[in-house]
Length: 350
Image (cartoon, rainbow, N blue to C red):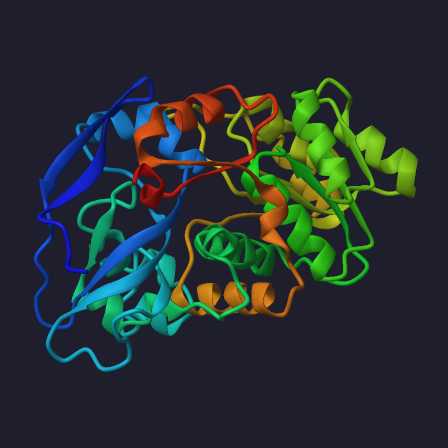
Protein backbone atom coordinates (compact mmCIF):
# COMPACT_ATOMS: atom_id res chain seq x y z
CA UNK A 1 0.00 0.00 0.00
CA UNK A 2 1.39 3.41 -0.96
CA UNK A 3 1.81 6.46 1.21
CA UNK A 4 -1.01 8.99 1.59
CA UNK A 5 -0.79 12.35 -0.13
CA UNK A 6 -1.22 14.26 3.09
CA UNK A 7 0.13 14.20 6.63
CA UNK A 8 -2.32 14.52 9.51
CA UNK A 9 -0.85 16.70 12.28
CA UNK A 10 -1.92 18.26 15.60
CA UNK A 11 -1.11 21.97 15.63
CA UNK A 12 -0.50 23.48 19.05
CA UNK A 13 -1.86 26.99 19.65
CA UNK A 14 -2.15 26.67 23.43
CA UNK A 15 -2.71 23.94 26.01
CA UNK A 16 -6.47 24.23 25.44
CA UNK A 17 -6.32 24.73 21.69
CA UNK A 18 -4.87 21.91 19.57
CA UNK A 19 -6.17 21.65 16.02
CA UNK A 20 -6.00 18.71 13.63
CA UNK A 21 -4.86 19.68 10.13
CA UNK A 22 -3.85 18.00 6.89
CA UNK A 23 -0.50 19.09 5.51
CA UNK A 24 1.73 17.92 2.68
CA UNK A 25 3.63 14.73 3.37
CA UNK A 26 7.26 15.67 4.18
CA UNK A 27 9.62 15.09 1.27
CA UNK A 28 12.88 13.43 2.23
CA UNK A 29 16.33 14.06 0.83
CA UNK A 30 19.65 12.26 0.89
CA UNK A 31 20.47 10.64 4.22
CA UNK A 32 16.98 11.21 5.63
CA UNK A 33 14.20 8.92 6.83
CA UNK A 34 10.42 9.13 6.71
CA UNK A 35 8.76 7.50 9.72
CA UNK A 36 5.18 6.45 10.24
CA UNK A 37 4.60 7.29 13.89
CA UNK A 38 3.37 4.34 15.94
CA UNK A 39 3.61 5.90 19.41
CA UNK A 40 4.23 9.48 20.51
CA UNK A 41 4.29 10.40 24.19
CA UNK A 42 3.02 13.67 25.63
CA UNK A 43 5.89 15.08 27.68
CA UNK A 44 5.55 17.32 30.70
CA UNK A 45 7.48 19.95 28.77
CA UNK A 46 4.76 19.92 26.09
CA UNK A 47 2.31 21.48 28.56
CA UNK A 48 4.71 24.17 29.85
CA UNK A 49 2.69 26.93 28.22
CA UNK A 50 5.13 29.69 29.14
CA UNK A 51 7.73 27.78 27.11
CA UNK A 52 5.60 26.51 24.23
CA UNK A 53 3.11 29.27 23.48
CA UNK A 54 5.62 31.87 22.20
CA UNK A 55 6.53 29.36 19.46
CA UNK A 56 2.90 28.65 18.47
CA UNK A 57 1.43 27.65 16.14
CA UNK A 58 3.65 24.60 15.99
CA UNK A 59 3.58 20.81 15.96
CA UNK A 60 4.98 19.43 19.21
CA UNK A 61 5.99 15.88 20.14
CA UNK A 62 9.50 14.47 20.56
CA UNK A 63 9.08 11.08 22.29
CA UNK A 64 8.48 8.86 19.28
CA UNK A 65 8.62 5.34 17.99
CA UNK A 66 7.89 4.60 14.37
CA UNK A 67 8.26 2.46 11.29
CA UNK A 68 10.55 3.37 8.39
CA UNK A 69 8.43 4.03 5.30
CA UNK A 70 10.96 6.03 3.31
CA UNK A 71 14.76 6.21 3.11
CA UNK A 72 16.81 8.78 1.23
CA UNK A 73 19.87 8.13 -0.89
CA UNK A 74 22.86 6.96 1.08
CA UNK A 75 20.92 5.47 4.00
CA UNK A 76 22.25 1.95 4.51
CA UNK A 77 21.67 1.19 8.22
CA UNK A 78 17.87 1.30 8.03
CA UNK A 79 15.39 -0.29 5.67
CA UNK A 80 11.69 -0.04 4.88
CA UNK A 81 9.64 -1.66 7.62
CA UNK A 82 12.25 -1.28 10.38
CA UNK A 83 10.88 -0.33 13.79
CA UNK A 84 12.95 2.50 15.24
CA UNK A 85 13.07 5.23 17.83
CA UNK A 86 14.34 8.65 16.84
CA UNK A 87 15.46 11.59 18.94
CA UNK A 88 14.73 15.15 17.85
CA UNK A 89 18.05 16.51 19.21
CA UNK A 90 21.50 15.17 18.35
CA UNK A 91 24.99 16.48 19.23
CA UNK A 92 27.74 16.88 16.68
CA UNK A 93 30.08 14.48 18.58
CA UNK A 94 33.07 16.64 17.55
CA UNK A 95 33.00 19.95 19.47
CA UNK A 96 34.72 20.59 22.82
CA UNK A 97 31.48 19.90 24.68
CA UNK A 98 30.90 16.56 23.01
CA UNK A 99 34.51 15.47 23.45
CA UNK A 100 34.26 16.11 27.21
CA UNK A 101 30.94 14.32 27.69
CA UNK A 102 28.84 17.50 27.78
CA UNK A 103 26.85 16.69 24.66
CA UNK A 104 23.72 18.50 25.78
CA UNK A 105 25.67 21.77 25.66
CA UNK A 106 26.47 21.19 21.98
CA UNK A 107 25.20 23.88 19.59
CA UNK A 108 23.94 21.31 17.07
CA UNK A 109 21.85 19.57 19.72
CA UNK A 110 19.88 22.79 20.22
CA UNK A 111 19.33 23.31 16.48
CA UNK A 112 18.17 19.86 15.35
CA UNK A 113 14.48 18.88 15.23
CA UNK A 114 11.91 16.71 13.46
CA UNK A 115 9.76 17.88 10.53
CA UNK A 116 7.10 18.33 11.79
CA UNK A 117 6.93 17.37 15.48
CA UNK A 118 5.99 13.91 16.68
CA UNK A 119 2.26 14.62 17.00
CA UNK A 120 1.80 13.71 13.37
CA UNK A 121 1.11 10.62 11.29
CA UNK A 122 4.48 10.92 9.52
CA UNK A 123 7.77 12.59 10.46
CA UNK A 124 10.87 13.43 8.44
CA UNK A 125 14.08 12.64 10.33
CA UNK A 126 16.92 14.90 9.12
CA UNK A 127 20.20 13.47 7.89
CA UNK A 128 22.12 14.78 10.92
CA UNK A 129 19.84 12.83 13.27
CA UNK A 130 20.23 9.67 11.21
CA UNK A 131 24.00 10.03 10.79
CA UNK A 132 24.92 10.97 14.37
CA UNK A 133 23.22 8.17 16.28
CA UNK A 134 19.79 9.69 16.76
CA UNK A 135 17.95 6.68 15.32
CA UNK A 136 18.03 3.25 16.97
CA UNK A 137 16.40 -0.08 16.03
CA UNK A 138 13.76 -1.36 18.45
CA UNK A 139 14.25 -4.94 19.70
CA UNK A 140 11.38 -7.26 18.77
CA UNK A 141 10.20 -7.76 22.36
CA UNK A 142 10.08 -4.01 23.18
CA UNK A 143 6.67 -2.52 22.42
CA UNK A 144 6.15 0.69 20.48
CA UNK A 145 4.69 2.36 23.59
CA UNK A 146 7.73 1.44 25.64
CA UNK A 147 10.11 2.45 22.86
CA UNK A 148 8.55 5.92 22.70
CA UNK A 149 9.82 6.40 26.27
CA UNK A 150 13.46 5.77 25.40
CA UNK A 151 14.04 9.53 25.12
CA UNK A 152 12.68 10.44 28.58
CA UNK A 153 14.38 7.43 30.17
CA UNK A 154 17.63 8.46 28.49
CA UNK A 155 17.28 11.93 30.04
CA UNK A 156 16.65 10.33 33.45
CA UNK A 157 19.63 8.02 33.04
CA UNK A 158 21.91 10.93 32.20
CA UNK A 159 20.62 12.84 35.22
CA UNK A 160 21.17 9.99 37.65
CA UNK A 161 24.66 9.46 36.31
CA UNK A 162 25.42 13.12 37.03
CA UNK A 163 23.92 12.76 40.50
CA UNK A 164 25.87 9.57 41.19
CA UNK A 165 22.90 7.35 42.06
CA UNK A 166 24.12 3.85 42.90
CA UNK A 167 23.88 0.80 45.15
CA UNK A 168 22.89 1.44 48.75
CA UNK A 169 21.78 5.03 48.21
CA UNK A 170 18.81 6.67 49.87
CA UNK A 171 17.01 8.65 47.17
CA UNK A 172 14.30 11.26 47.56
CA UNK A 173 12.31 12.24 44.45
CA UNK A 174 10.29 15.44 44.55
CA UNK A 175 7.48 15.10 42.03
CA UNK A 176 5.79 11.85 40.96
CA UNK A 177 4.85 12.66 37.39
CA UNK A 178 6.28 10.65 34.52
CA UNK A 179 9.83 11.90 35.08
CA UNK A 180 9.64 11.25 38.81
CA UNK A 181 8.32 7.73 38.26
CA UNK A 182 11.04 7.00 35.70
CA UNK A 183 13.58 8.19 38.26
CA UNK A 184 11.98 5.84 40.79
CA UNK A 185 12.19 2.82 38.49
CA UNK A 186 15.76 3.61 37.45
CA UNK A 187 17.00 4.22 41.00
CA UNK A 188 15.64 0.80 41.94
CA UNK A 189 17.35 -0.77 38.93
CA UNK A 190 20.64 0.88 39.91
CA UNK A 191 20.48 -0.65 43.37
CA UNK A 192 19.24 2.18 45.59
CA UNK A 193 18.44 0.89 49.07
CA UNK A 194 15.57 3.31 49.72
CA UNK A 195 13.49 5.47 47.40
CA UNK A 196 11.08 8.05 48.83
CA UNK A 197 8.70 10.20 46.80
CA UNK A 198 6.85 13.41 47.57
CA UNK A 199 3.96 14.84 45.55
CA UNK A 200 0.88 16.95 46.34
CA UNK A 201 -1.53 14.70 44.37
CA UNK A 202 -2.93 11.55 46.04
CA UNK A 203 -3.20 9.71 42.70
CA UNK A 204 0.45 10.26 41.95
CA UNK A 205 1.46 9.13 45.41
CA UNK A 206 -0.54 5.93 44.88
CA UNK A 207 1.29 5.39 41.59
CA UNK A 208 4.65 5.80 43.33
CA UNK A 209 3.70 3.20 45.93
CA UNK A 210 2.46 0.86 43.18
CA UNK A 211 5.86 1.19 41.52
CA UNK A 212 7.69 0.24 44.71
CA UNK A 213 8.54 3.47 46.55
CA UNK A 214 9.38 2.94 50.23
CA UNK A 215 6.98 5.75 51.07
CA UNK A 216 5.11 8.49 49.23
CA UNK A 217 4.10 11.55 51.21
CA UNK A 218 2.42 14.88 50.69
CA UNK A 219 4.57 17.93 50.06
CA UNK A 220 3.18 19.55 53.21
CA UNK A 221 5.29 17.09 55.20
CA UNK A 222 8.92 18.20 55.72
CA UNK A 223 10.74 15.88 53.34
CA UNK A 224 13.99 15.87 55.29
CA UNK A 225 12.28 14.98 58.57
CA UNK A 226 10.37 12.13 56.94
CA UNK A 227 13.46 10.60 55.34
CA UNK A 228 15.54 10.96 58.51
CA UNK A 229 12.81 9.40 60.65
CA UNK A 230 12.79 6.35 58.36
CA UNK A 231 16.54 5.90 57.80
CA UNK A 232 18.36 7.87 60.49
CA UNK A 233 19.99 10.18 57.93
CA UNK A 234 19.16 12.50 55.04
CA UNK A 235 18.88 11.51 51.41
CA UNK A 236 22.13 10.75 49.60
CA UNK A 237 20.54 11.94 46.35
CA UNK A 238 17.61 14.34 46.04
CA UNK A 239 16.06 14.55 42.57
CA UNK A 240 13.78 17.53 42.00
CA UNK A 241 11.30 16.79 39.20
CA UNK A 242 9.05 19.77 39.88
CA UNK A 243 9.66 23.41 39.09
CA UNK A 244 7.64 24.62 42.08
CA UNK A 245 9.76 26.81 44.38
CA UNK A 246 8.82 24.81 47.54
CA UNK A 247 10.15 21.60 45.95
CA UNK A 248 13.38 23.31 44.96
CA UNK A 249 13.80 24.78 48.43
CA UNK A 250 13.00 21.57 50.34
CA UNK A 251 15.72 19.68 48.50
CA UNK A 252 18.47 21.34 50.51
CA UNK A 253 16.67 20.57 53.75
CA UNK A 254 16.47 16.90 52.82
CA UNK A 255 19.94 16.13 51.40
CA UNK A 256 22.45 14.40 53.67
CA UNK A 257 25.93 15.72 54.37
CA UNK A 258 28.04 15.28 51.26
CA UNK A 259 24.98 14.36 49.21
CA UNK A 260 23.81 15.57 45.81
CA UNK A 261 20.78 17.55 44.69
CA UNK A 262 19.81 17.06 41.05
CA UNK A 263 17.53 19.73 39.60
CA UNK A 264 15.63 18.01 36.79
CA UNK A 265 12.87 20.52 36.02
CA UNK A 266 12.94 24.23 35.16
CA UNK A 267 11.27 27.02 37.05
CA UNK A 268 9.30 29.73 35.30
CA UNK A 269 11.37 32.43 33.58
CA UNK A 270 12.57 35.11 35.94
CA UNK A 271 11.96 33.13 39.12
CA UNK A 272 14.76 33.43 41.64
CA UNK A 273 15.17 31.24 44.69
CA UNK A 274 17.30 32.38 47.64
CA UNK A 275 20.07 29.90 48.40
CA UNK A 276 21.06 29.26 52.04
CA UNK A 277 24.68 29.28 50.99
CA UNK A 278 26.23 28.55 54.38
CA UNK A 279 24.05 25.46 54.78
CA UNK A 280 25.67 24.15 51.61
CA UNK A 281 29.17 25.29 52.52
CA UNK A 282 29.49 24.63 56.26
CA UNK A 283 27.07 21.86 57.08
CA UNK A 284 26.19 19.91 53.97
CA UNK A 285 29.16 20.23 51.63
CA UNK A 286 26.47 19.26 49.17
CA UNK A 287 26.75 19.13 45.41
CA UNK A 288 24.06 20.96 43.44
CA UNK A 289 23.75 19.99 39.80
CA UNK A 290 21.25 19.94 36.96
CA UNK A 291 20.63 17.84 33.89
CA UNK A 292 18.93 18.59 30.59
CA UNK A 293 18.34 16.28 27.67
CA UNK A 294 20.21 13.19 26.57
CA UNK A 295 22.87 12.12 24.09
CA UNK A 296 22.55 9.14 21.72
CA UNK A 297 24.66 7.02 24.08
CA UNK A 298 22.15 7.69 26.85
CA UNK A 299 19.31 6.60 24.57
CA UNK A 300 21.14 3.40 23.65
CA UNK A 301 21.72 2.66 27.35
CA UNK A 302 18.06 3.37 28.14
CA UNK A 303 16.92 1.05 25.35
CA UNK A 304 19.24 -1.66 26.67
CA UNK A 305 17.67 -1.35 30.14
CA UNK A 306 14.26 -1.88 28.56
CA UNK A 307 15.44 -4.77 26.41
CA UNK A 308 17.00 -6.45 29.48
CA UNK A 309 13.71 -5.91 31.34
CA UNK A 310 15.47 -4.01 34.13
CA UNK A 311 13.15 -1.00 33.76
CA UNK A 312 9.52 -1.69 32.83
CA UNK A 313 8.32 1.65 31.50
CA UNK A 314 5.04 0.10 30.32
CA UNK A 315 3.90 0.31 33.96
CA UNK A 316 3.57 4.07 33.48
CA UNK A 317 1.20 4.04 30.49
CA UNK A 318 -2.36 4.88 31.52
CA UNK A 319 -3.89 6.13 28.25
CA UNK A 320 -3.52 5.45 24.50
CA UNK A 321 -5.38 7.87 22.25
CA UNK A 322 -5.76 8.59 18.54
CA UNK A 323 -4.29 11.80 17.19
CA UNK A 324 -7.82 13.17 16.83
CA UNK A 325 -8.17 13.03 20.65
CA UNK A 326 -4.90 14.77 21.46
CA UNK A 327 -6.77 17.62 23.16
CA UNK A 328 -8.12 15.06 25.62
CA UNK A 329 -4.57 13.84 26.13
CA UNK A 330 -3.39 17.35 26.99
CA UNK A 331 -6.37 17.77 29.34
CA UNK A 332 -5.36 14.56 31.14
CA UNK A 333 -1.82 15.86 31.54
CA UNK A 334 -3.04 19.23 32.82
CA UNK A 335 -5.26 17.61 35.47
CA UNK A 336 -3.38 14.38 36.26
CA UNK A 337 -5.58 12.93 38.97
CA UNK A 338 -5.50 9.37 37.66
CA UNK A 339 -3.37 9.64 34.52
CA UNK A 340 0.35 9.21 34.13
CA UNK A 341 1.80 8.52 30.69
CA UNK A 342 -0.42 9.44 27.74
CA UNK A 343 0.54 7.93 24.38
CA UNK A 344 -0.75 9.19 21.02
CA UNK A 345 -1.02 6.61 18.22
CA UNK A 346 -2.02 8.27 14.92
CA UNK A 347 -2.88 4.87 13.42
CA UNK A 348 -5.92 4.72 15.71
CA UNK A 349 -7.52 7.49 13.63
CA UNK A 350 -8.18 4.90 10.97
